[in-house]
Image 1 (cartoon, rainbow, N blue to C red):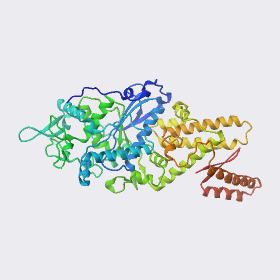
Image 2 (image 1 turned 135 degrees about the vertical axis):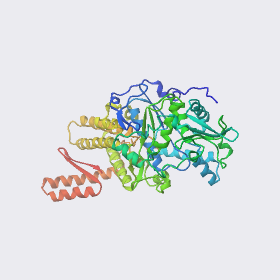
Image 3 (image 1 turned 60 degrees about the vertical axis):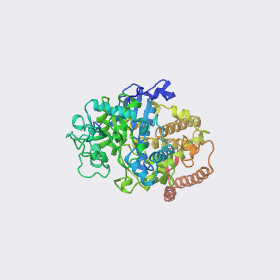
Image 4 (image 1 turned 90 degrees about the horizontal axis):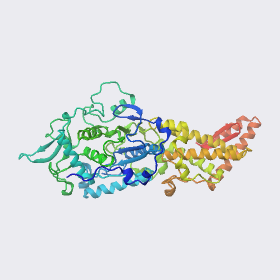
Length: 549
């Protein structure tokens, strides 16, 4: 059952960019990230200089993706993009769980082959990721492709005395294998089951809202695996490494092993796949907050019990909530990605999903989408106006070539503060306001070439910051798919923008004349009328500028 190959460094084997030299930005020295295990924000130091290995738990492909699923994907896409902007070589692994009780049961109910159902919804997830600008992973392993890795890992756990095989009346392996929690004194270190010290507020919120072994009674967010309720367990805390098949399981959902016929437990999959592609120890293990217990607690325990280091840092994205309640299909509040995209542009949906820091609960509402659309209008308005003023846009190569060291300091400080997207977004709009002021000065300044240079520098900074968040409107997938909804590269002014510019300029001129005549009532009326139309007016020494709210 052994594997002939050792885990590979996929930066070397499948990423041509790995052949280029590593130039980590000085800004990387200021990166601080939260760790679920320590409940603290601490300085990030990679295990290997210049390289970062990240494993994020992907989808269980039982049905269509909803906004809750994709929030986690967008959150860790932003984390990954920041590492890339800092100059690190990133190996990003995101798995697909394509064998599971829910997949088997739903396929049987629908009269489908389980693997066909899993593949169908895997493609739906991939389409959702691509549409929302989530970078493809370095490698995306399926659980069913790694049975030998799981079997080897379980055998190591058994050999180390941290698991046991259930036998039948004749003493033969019956297919169920359990992790022996009592044999592993470190169990509970991730979710602080043994810790009595006061914790920070973010951790306290997670403990109150998240599934935890400390909570008694039924847990509506984390249904118990049927195998974990077996009377064959030595201890209620023990969990399944391998499961004997149910009578209803099809024959092609069973694998033969030294400990009986069956299929893998949920947790063993990620331990096997993270080790296969990231080797002995890696920098970050990510996933949604609801995976914190039992999935990640069990995963950490079994990986270490097998003799391998676990992730150096655990990061969890918080939930999408609707009226304060976790969004999930079981609660009837799930929103499918296709239905949301039918009413909103993909750029707007991505902005809304990534608008707060990954550890913050994200309240999903119509207002969140309205605010995201307003943000797009402000962004695209500036980019288009600047492009027209300059006669064209900076190339994508220029935008992506901007180092973190060359980005505005307030943006870098926010991203280095545990990927504080809210602060980073504020920095973007501060820069846009400065750019709008510069644009208003072009016609009035004798040194217009110098101002043009400033406009170009500002435009480049804005697009580079947006690109770090996956939101540059002139990048893929927004350009090819038209997903952003009308962004222009600025080489020509759209008729709509030209008309808007003429109308607003006329109003600003009228307002300036009214103020000059000290008719402040009329000036205020013009300002208020523009504000009701979604136009923000800013007065400065060089005159008034406008932008979309």
